[in-house]
Length: 115
View 1 (cartoon, helix red, strand yellow):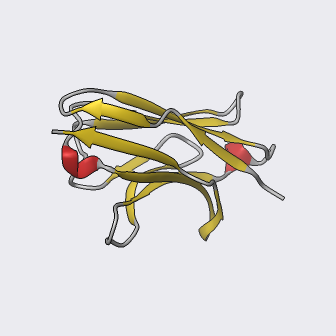
View 2 (view 1 turned 90 degrees about the vertical axis):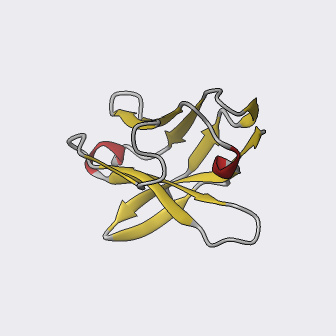
């Protein structure tokens, strides 16, 4: 069973930065695509960023140029560096391990950006 645990969320002023981490219990971390999703109150969950085992990345248009996804395969950990945060970035951020489709999810970490 794969377990994912996010950390690093919190309350930040607009324009500030946060770095989220996602620790994975599985030794297969390095061969799986990983992703960050977020869900704001009253909205559907949306893909924020995705990273392949080789480091290829994809971003939502709304975060391009501000967020950076990365991974450390030796540590089984994925990161999301979030800069120039906006109030619309507020939401619960969850990491997931993808095997064809998102298969395993963490509990999420709350990010709140105050204007």
